[in-house]
Every structure is written in C-alpha cells, then in structure tokens.
Image 1 (cartoon, helix red, strand yellow):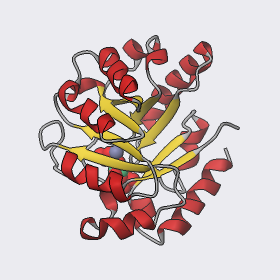
Image 2 (tube, helix red, strand yellow):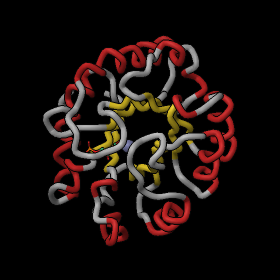
Image 3 (cartoon, helix red, strand yellow):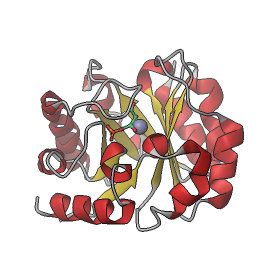
Image 4 (tube, protein in one colour):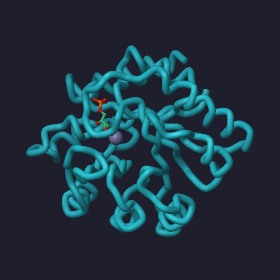
Length: 218
Ligand code: DX5
Ligand code: ZN
C-alpha cells in the first residue's frame, strides 16, 4: 500500500482560535489552507498576511489550496513564505507548467487542482511537471458539501497516468471526505485526503484517526 495522508482543512476551524485549532491537528500529515478571493470562487477567506502567521505557528507543514484568479501572479508568494506545497487551479493559470516550475524552484511542492467540470486529458501527459494533483470532489468554495462519486473516473485516469509514468505524484481529493466516502476515493487511487467538517466536527485527533483507519482498509 502506498502512503496515505490526512490533511485537515482549517476552513472548518474556528478562525478566532486558529493557533489552538492548529495545535489540535498535530497528528495530521499536513494542514490544508484554503485561500479564496471571492472571484475565482464565491467566498473569501484569507491572504498572505494570515497565511504567514499560520506558517509561523503551525506544528504541521502547510498544504496551500489556492482558489484564486490570476494564480500566476500570486502562487509563488505562498511558496516563498515557506509552505510545504502550493496547489493552484489550472482554470486560473495561463501556463500551469511554467508556474509549477517556479513553485518548485522556490522549494515547495507544486500541485494543480481541477474543478469538477474540468477535463483531465490535457494534464495526463504533463504529470512529471507536478508533485500533486487535486481532484475536487465538490464545487470549490465551501466546506460541508456532499462528495461527488462521479469524479472517481477522473481520479482513475490520473492514477493510470501516474502508474504509466512510474511517478510518485500525490493524488489528492478535497470535498465531502468522511469515514464513509474516503474508501471510495482511496480505491480509485487517491492517497492524500482533505477533510474539513469531518475533522473539526468532532474531536480532531479522534476524527483524524478514524479517517486514517477507514482509508487504510482500501
Ligand atoms: C472547499 C475547500 C475544501 C473544504 C472541504 O472548496 O477546498 O478544502 O474545506 O470541506 P469538507 O471536508 O467539509 O467538504
Ligand atoms: Zn481545499
């Protein structure tokens, strides 16, 4: 079995107690930080000043998910402030390969994210350029939505391309991941699981352990 990672999304955390909320998930692999600009998605979260503080106090490295327009302009800044991985949406970049190279050059892992309606085809042959592919299993913008099982064929396409190229690209799913859905995504080839409401809706440490156990069954 390949390594599996559980990345809680702080979108479902209490934003006025962020430091404590970050401490509460120290058993996680990475902390998933959703940046939204009220343009690429109809919601607004945070930008570089807050992410910089999160980076300074978080015991767990940062997995940035940029749901913002003009990714070419903004994504490298998140790598510069020390994030472990920076994932931008292909729909928001004019040149995903060049942007990924920039992110890697700065020293972060480079990821691409695809909205549910985005065709995976153009990216399958480009996989060596990326460290992570995020297949969205909800429309980006909000936590607490229902998992879209019809995204599994897309995930499988990436898993097949990864095997074909013999690469160690991480395949991430984000949206509606719970103990009931995580196995479906694992079975389709995902190894990196984002969960917001499923983690912060209970005792985070217990929820992380439950998700790990459920994912490991596949
Ligand atoms: C949604 C965000 C997700 C969100 C997931 O656009 O990208 O990371 O926090 O929340 P849940 O796990 O509640 O679906
Ligand atoms: Zn996300």
